[in-house]
Length: 103
Image (cartoon, rainbow, N blue to C red):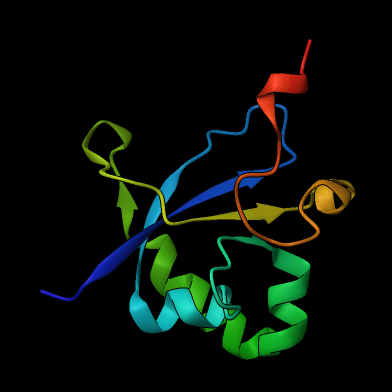
């Protein structure tokens, strides 16, 4: 069996499900190319990888939804339609928020 990494997909829909999908190492590296990168925005991925390639990668990943109750770790987060969040994820790496300073 291939080594798979879990990607949580978060979109701007009011009924977003925060689904988890499995990606091969190659697919994961295409989406998250930076050293230690675990955050990406769909528009950045599609622009970098070119729409046709990105669409093919995502078509395969969409077929591999993982039951959240069985997930052991989330390796990356892919945001769809939430470019306004980029200011919070400038480094495209977790962690982003220092919870000690949140009231």
